[in-house]
Amino acid sequence: MKARVTKQCMGDRNCNKLCPEVFKYDEDQLLSVVQYDMIPEKYEDLVRQAAAECGADAIEIEE
Ligand code: SF4
Image (cartoon, rainbow, N blue to C red; front, side, top):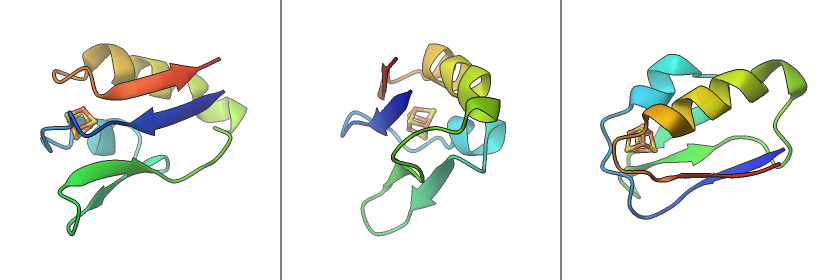
């Protein structure tokens, strides 16, 4: 699975709280960024949850 955060991110950091291993907040770009090219299997469910919960619909997943 791959994931990315689009420019639609509004920076509320919900994904960072949900899965800090995958999502980090970039203070320069003012949006969250994904730390992995391929998401480790153990984090996949959390990444799906983060995408579902993202109020800005900014997390794109490629299964
Ligand atoms: S949950 Fe969505 S809007 Fe909030 S920081 Fe993460 S990607 Fe951005």
